[in-house]
Image 1: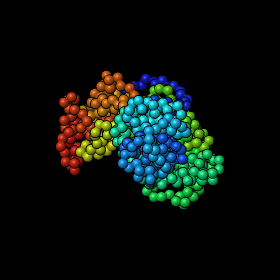
Image 2: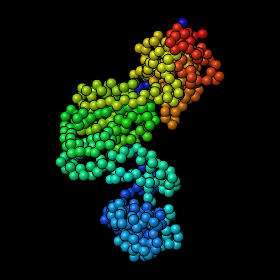
Image 3: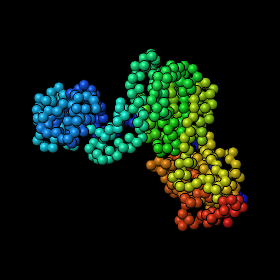
Image 4: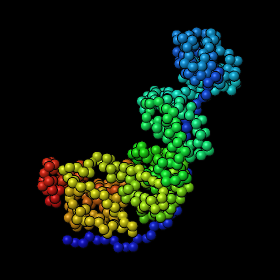
Length: 520
C-alpha cells in the first residue's frame, strides 16, 4: 500500500478582520403606500347607488363613518343597510352629487362608470382636499382598496396595485385561513390594555417584554379569550428581568442556527429570536434573506470567518458577544447550519458560562440535511449505511485534521459527510482509498447547498477532486461519500461506479449488505 501524498507547504495566516456593523437592506420600491384611515365619526361621501356602491357603503359604515350616499336610484339593499348599518351612520340622498357635497369630507368614493363624470368627481375631491377613489377605475384613484382580512381591531389588507384583483383575493383567502378568528379577542384586549403599560413606568425594556409575552401567549392560545389573570401575569413577568436572565440589567445571548441558506428552512424559534434581537452577530455565510427576519431596529454586525481569507478572531467575537449582553442587549449569534455542528458553538458557550451570561441554543438544519433533501437521497439507507458520520476537512491550520480515524472513515457501510472539504478533498480521497474504501464509491460535492446559487458536482471517490478542479468551483463546499448516494448518480454517465453498489438487497441480511459494498 502506498502512502498518499500530503501537502506540507506552509499556509499563509488568514488576514485579520474586525467586527463590522452593517446597515439593513434598503426597502424595495413600493407600488403603493399601505395606509389605514381612521374614519370613526368622520364624514364619508359616496357617489352612486349601484351594487358595487352598496358594498363600499357597508365597508365605510363599518369603520364608524357617517356616510352620505348620493344617487338618483339605489340598488336593492340600500334601504335595509341604511336602517341597520354595521356601525356609524348611512344617509341616502336621492339626487346627483354636487361639488359642494365633498366639502369637509374625509374620504370620497365614486361608483361612476362615465369618464366625464368620474373626472369631474375627482376634480371636485381634489379641490376640497379629499382623498378620492373611483371604484374599478385605477386611473381616477388617489388610493386603492385592498382585499381585507377582518379580525378588527386586527386588520390585514392585500393589494396587487390593481394588476390582479383575483390574485389578491386568493392571497386574502390564504391569510384568512392562517389567522385564527380568536385573534380578534386578543387584539381587542391589546387595545384595552394599552394604558396598563403605564404600570411598568418608563422601563422601555419591560414594556417591550410585556408585548412580546402578550404576542407569544396570543399565538399559543388564540382560541380562548384573554383574561384579567393574563394581564396580571404579563405585568408581573415583565417587571422582573427576563426569566432567562441571571439578574436585572443583564442581557441574553441566543446561538441560532440559520440553516444552510434557504430562508424557508429557518425554524419558528429562530425567527422569533431574530425578531426580538437588539443585536445580531452574523457570519459570512448568512444570506441576506435570512438577515431580513431581524427587526429593523436591530444592529447587525458581521463577525465572519472565511476559510483561508479575512477572519474575525473567535476570542474577539466572544468578547463582543459578552460585552453586548452585559449592556442589557438581547444578542443573537447567527451561525450558518447548526451552531453545534462544526460551528464553534462550544467555545462560545464555554465563554458565556464563564462570564455568567444567560443563554440558549436554537438548533438549525445542518448542511448535510439540506443537501440530502436536495439530492433526494437517504443518507442512512438501510441497505447501504449502518452509520452516518460527520467530519471536518479543515483543521485550525487549514489542513486536513491529523486525528481522523481512517479505518472508521473507510468503512464501506457508512455514509460520510465532509464539511469544509474543498481545499483538502484530494488528500482526503487518497487517504480513504489507501485505507481500503473502493475508489468507485459514489461521491458528491455540493457548493452553496439549498441556495439559489447551489451547484452540484457528482462522481466517485477517486475522480471527484479532479472534477471539482476542472469545474473551478469555489465557496462553501460539502462532500458526501458512500454507497447510499448511488441513487443520486447516473451509472450511464459515470462507468467508474461500482455496479455492485446498487443491487436489490434483503435489508435484514448483513452478510449480503456487506458483499454489496465490497470492492470488486
